[in-house]
Image (tube, rainbow, N blue to C red; front, top):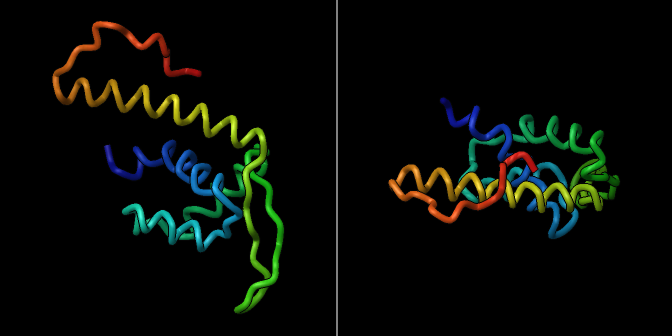
Length: 118
């Protein structure tokens, strides 16, 4: 499995987490992801995800003046987007715990009670 395949579902949650803190425009999102080690992700990867998230009403956008060039489209989280981020974090923690357990040969004897579909 390639890194690209693994990133498909994860990237949405990462974008929501970055946008949660403040309004952000597309290029700035790419820069923020780069700071966390995702240098290979371009705006061309990010914009289609943002458009889909906007259609799903997870984010909204507004155009604002730029100090350099044309107006920029800034994205912010909706209430639905905040709920989706909470769900993503729950799913991520569940998966991370279980995958790390497998990789480290640690068995969860208590069971998390989370089915991963929430």
